[in-house]
Length: 152
Image: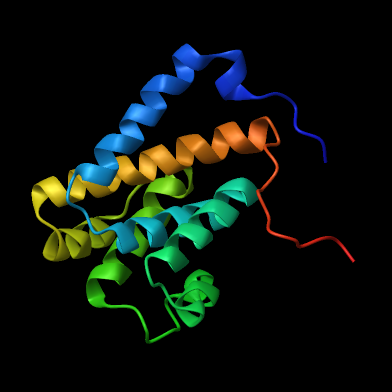
């Protein structure tokens, strides 16, 4: 699959606020590893290979384990995620799949038990940001940056 265009090159003025949004999220105080889990889970749902490759690499740099990364799509069945992470992942799925039934009250209630109001706003903005990046990269077929993996 060939990339359609380079967003940053074609419209740097549109790219700049997205980059600034990412800078805010990196500095907002929300745990970096949690943000990476959220980014990976949303990217799995949206099928964004570019973002998956990037955020798995970033999560590993932060010390995330292979087991936790491999089991992320089955987080409900895997006992290796904390209550806070589970609440964030449920929130991520509900916000990412908002057209499938909006955001259920029980998901909101659980995430509110685990996160302060500011943390929840920042978490929600992190989910919004990765969903935007997923849509941009899927739409324009941005290829994932891979080390040496090739199709066999």
